[in-house]
Image (tube, rainbow, N blue to C red; front, top):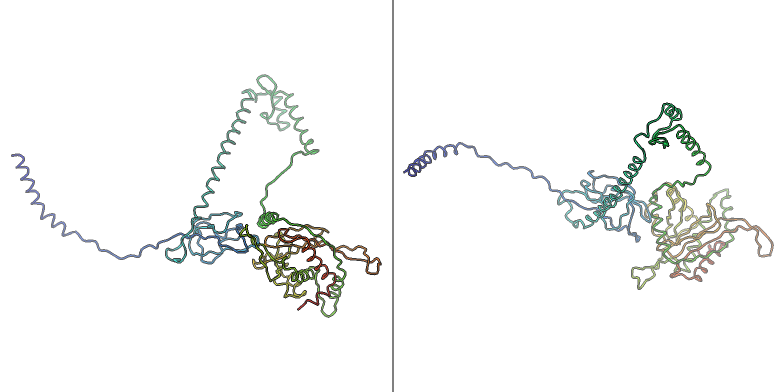
Length: 465
């Protein structure tokens, strides 16, 4: 009965609440939907170091123009790099926010690696391929902290050992001393903790202080007479030095041989003096401009020395013959050694070559040489004689067959054709060649032809076009 009564009251209560709930639901206002703009979606693109050409497989970052979190516009400079050939900027292919720099200044970056990650608006660059996996490759930098962590506890333990040994060596009474001893310590500016006491319980005596002062005064005198300690400091290589280190290391992997010759440049010197002293139109021409033209004329007869070796297939290396004579000129600049090249020397006159040398030299000193100026060389000449030195053993540059080093001119007595002693101006020419392909006989014939043209510059007139 209680169950029936309770169920009856429960049903009555439900029936009584139904209309009220209905009324309450009818009075509630319904929310209205409104249209709003969706937030733009963003994606991440990786700026990959593309192939810069000339067989260059890696570059060195000199400086970044942006930092993480900075906004970068499309085609704006990202960073400055140094390669084997030139110093240039890398521009951004994307517009967005720089999220991560994978390399720091002075780091070496292989081609194909991601330089940085840029957050871009999704869908703005649909044609780009998805960012390559190099995004993960900078993670090897994470083991670096693990390598640097172990030394820390070692250093801490070593310092703690030193501290413990120093603390155990001194007794609690080591700093106790008589007023006379303390007065002597104050007079000579001596810390009592630096003095080893020989008294009872390690106390410092007057004799201990005097002995310490005598040793301290003798130490500077001994150091001033004989310094056995070598001061060494660590210095980073400049970008050009780093590239030269890699280039020369790669060059010396090639077997090379040296061929030296001596030239009499009296005739060229006479022509240069006549042109410089011309009252109507004086012209200053260097010996180097005549030598470069003579090299180009000789390359017409010995084109092998203008070629390069293709070793992409090590089992079947082959020669790449090149028609243009792009002769590189080694220049000493404030930034270091640079080798711009004079393009197509065969089609230039000696006067044109001289003006091009001046132009390249001026741009090199200002640090404004372009990648085009520093690339494309086929053979190189280095006039080290401008600085000094009679003999030189130059190193062949990669992708070239030979290099010429010119020594300092010197005036010595020589015999003329009549057997009379006369004054002669002699210069040493030192050739280095790639001995994998060039033999000594070919190099000697090439050098002889250059010597004939330089010693008798009138022969150049027969070959000029």
